[in-house]
Image (cartoon, rainbow, N blue to C red; front, side, top):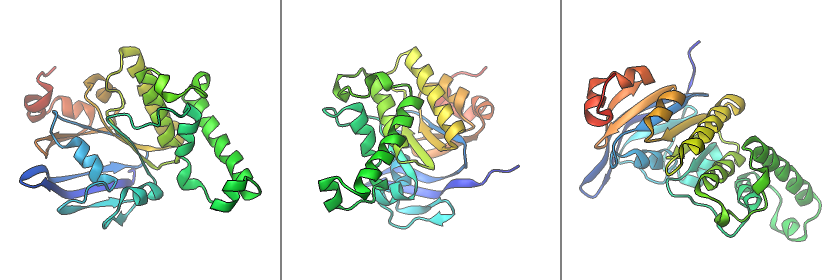
Length: 257
């Protein structure tokens, strides 16, 4: 049975002055799938994620999310619509605990007014309990119970990346954008993160679009791969199709089986 598209990128072009970051890029990502975006440094991968979640507005083309064409969408609206994001450089509150950092991911779900929040009674008290229950479930899911009260700044890099994933999941996204989630990790940490991404996709039903340079990881966990080079799409297909695509081999992979 054919899956529905959750995300469509249609003829998107993005320029910064005279520099063309993206040139007529098109692809679609299906519901409950994992799509990887790969390519050399400077290929436009992070710029593409920034267009998808509203950080950048393209000069040409359109983004369609859940069958709705986005016009002048900003990141806050993207988050409200069901898109969560992690970043190439970790963006956590280093002085706050793991639990507190993940709770910030629930901010869009909070309904209690400022007065009740200040006095912590009634609806605010019940809401706080509900949010903490969701956060504790995510902590268990990502196996970080032992560091839940630890300030994030004291954690090793791999665990900080896991906390950032937890915070993104706390918003209950339908589409999760991951910008190099395994950068700087050792082999064991990459194996753990790969397993968690697969579990998020399978158990939560979350669609995932990720940027990743480790081709072993990409080939293992992706349903589809989009390849960029100098802002242009030079390949799209299954992992097997991509690793046998001569244009992709010449531009990026470098070797063929």
